[in-house]
Length: 388
Image (cartoon, rainbow, N blue to C red; front, side):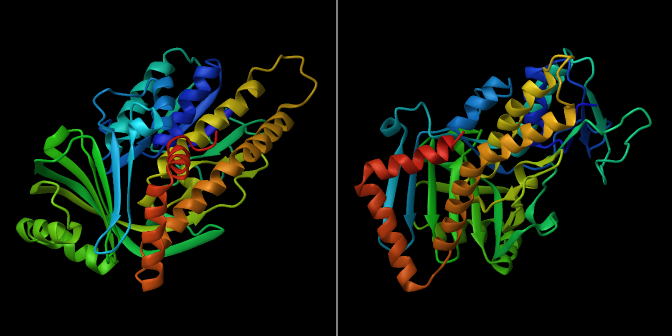
């Protein structure tokens, strides 16, 4: 084999599609822990933030739907304190600041694209119900891995992971779900920093009649909110949000996700590489986890492409070419990873603390962004496109 990808979430799928688009003759195995007998999308209905840059990547991969709701403006403020800022697509000359897509939907779109790509890839294998414990042992009698690249894309969620080099529990959980609403301004996202933690209301695929929500608070409080009856929950949400943006009518599919930071410092080792949540798991406050992972996947595919398009008489052995390509990949990803991880961790700490000087400082930071459009636009462009 040339490449083995462990993990068939959005990042692993995107990497497989990109590799096969670059080289349909690639001998690639995708290890999917799910069963082939259960082709339905995962029961994970989180609203995932997709930046404009990630949308462009997904369009190139044939994994986009025009039904995905766009964000035209973002309102950021803190409950009961000074400081707010607004970002609009017109300020950046973009069609949208980003999009919100259900995790199950983006997985489905990528799987469908990979199935299409697989019809042109005679050596591609999609193995289901398979976990690879040691990637440099044989996984079947005919497969040997001496000249193979192994891509770890099986990151999972924070509470499912083994601690990596940098591991931080934020002692927060996120309650996610969606709301039936009325009178809401369409294509608008709100990020509200409350005394309990960040509370985001985001566009939903059902249009102006629904909103996704992400409500971060202590694990005890999130469990309490999860178990409340619908009328009491909606009252608590209205009280916590504190802005008259419309009516909250019903709540659906409340799910809890513990939050933390889990970072692998060395993302390359010999012929192995870690991407997406297998390399870094982030707090959702900036909505950057999947966007960073997609940039990982596409950059890696571009670095590996020339290796497997080599001429048969190439004088350098394949394992050396793979190691050189992975070294180049790590170098290309260093700046984007460091900046995105740093900004997200700073925001997670700054916007969850309730120490009065910090509350004042973040209010000043929000006001400064509003007063200095070039600074605000630079931050917005980093969030939208990263450094690729």
